[in-house]
Image (cartoon, rainbow, N blue to C red):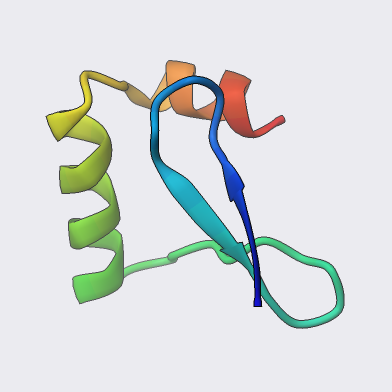
Length: 52
């Protein structure tokens, strides 16, 4: 499984499937992901800029 860092945040995302990055539509995974970004001071806008 490949990983990449999101911007200079120190947060890593795992590459899965056919080259797509996971997205969380809801549930526990989404809450944990949002909590992780919040802990690093990243809002939705910053997260979108870094992933794009």
